[in-house]
Amino acid sequence: MDTTNYYIAIDKVKLFYRSWIPERPKAIIILIHGAGEHSGRYTHISNYCMSQQMIVISPDLRGFGNSGGSRGHVHTFNEYLDDLHLLIQQVCSIYPDVPIFLFGHSLGGLIVIRYVQEYALQTNGIIVSSPAFKLRVQLPFMVKQILSAVSRFSPGLSVQPTKWKRLADKFQILEPYLPKERALQKDPLITAQYTARWLTELMRNGIQALSEAYRFSFPLFCVYDHKDPIVHPPSIQLFLDSIAIDDKNLLSFNDGFHHPWHAHYRDKAIDHLMVWLHQRI
Image (cartoon, rainbow, N blue to C red; front, top):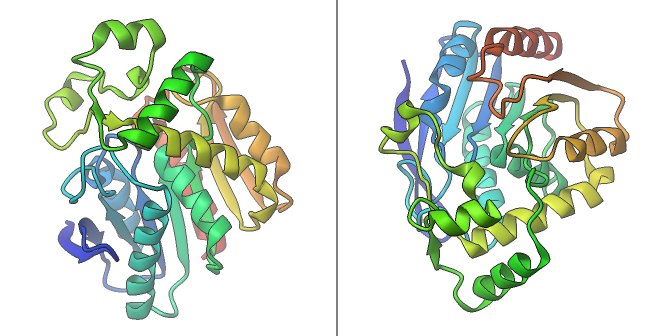
């Protein structure tokens, strides 16, 4: 069973999080969801981790799920990093001697990587799945120029591809982030709108994460699919090849899924993750 609570960001935005806390915790996992999602999408993983005596703390990112903030929007990507840092500080003050791992999917994976590149956190390991360094579909130059202009002069303008279907179909802008599964379409906490500022910040930080791969020096477990329809798989491999640390573990598939934790091979992915975690606790 999870418990829910809120914490207040530096800029006073109210941020929601879920906690799974066993009686005798031997590790802490901070789990960051992907774009459009929320922490409730990871209940199956979190319950399993708790059964293995691991704490899971999973926030809803600002602008998503139950958290405050404009839907699908950040002024700067650093807002995500600052929110995560504040949460980690609070958790570590309660459990100062428990090993801590950071876990992020897609957007969450990029946040976790950018966080450890910017903050001097001594973590026991990083877990990422399908990190969003780049989108699979490369945007035309004209579209990038339009997004850049809109991001600069109207950063809070929200784009809802479901209402602008013709444009989304033509350029495939944000289309990959729309919920496809019927269950997701019925989930009231799923967010299917984003701002131009959000998208430009995502792309800029993906490029920065790759260019500063040398700043990443933590044990790594990475899962991705070579046929991922949303993010750019070669960029993930480029990051793995660029980081200097020897302790990097890769689990890859070739089945065309973006979310390994909800694909048909999810049990295999979770089993490999648990082995990796237990080896480092």
